[in-house]
Length: 335
Image (cartoon, rainbow, N blue to C red; front, side, top):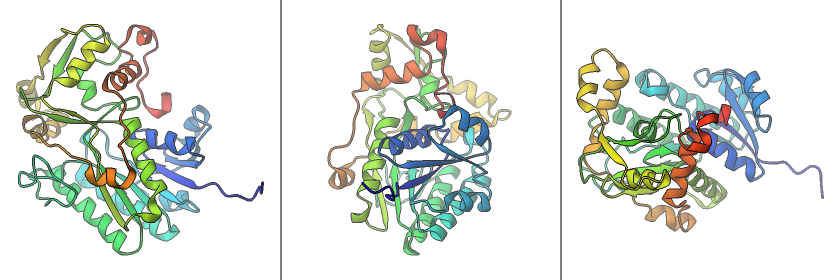
């Protein structure tokens, strides 16, 4: 066998986050060389030597371009934490990734959101449904996708997968972490949803595997290839709570309402609450992504049984008895 065979190389932006970390591990398992950009690369290289860490910032175009030299794929999985400063950071970071992909001839792989879809597309938007959101973050995501479409028209292949709320090992600071308290045994489950309203969840390992299968079929995909990932559709808003109860051995676990009134009271003083309230509609009315276009491209969607997925998530959060003494935050940097 020749020693000159070049392994494909991927650059991950957001490798310490949930979906970025999950995609990084799937790429590595498939034999890719995984490069990751981070502002604290030296510390991460020691913890995760399986990846090639590059010092830099996703907001600095020169850093992204330098890290992208020689790569085949750029995974743009970086977002401002806690919903902060979307209007200032989201589009400039994307512009840097698009410029790097164009300069170096790399594909772009991007996780999408459901924020784009307004009332005229709900409750069952498809990939080409109109995008007329009523929220500020939704409008930013519409602009985000327009830039990706333009990049594809200019010759950069784009693969984007829209999905619901993330959960799983590595999914820190998300809605699942509001249902339970990380690092503590589960005594009750908090439910943010209106009674009877469904909610869409995306288990990170399944989503990452789906994205990898699309990358492996990229030669047969259009320049702009967007898909909907169905994941776990909680049809009445109670199935996730029921799964948590089964996993912790409390099938009749108490379910408490999310303290929305408190969020309203605190929102003038706490920005996170203001940002959460803007997206409350996703818990008050159903928005269900179906995956017929995706399954036509890759076959059956990867889908871990819900109890198994919940168990892995609770274990990573340190909520199960065997994990309470070894609580892990679930991020790539400490996994």
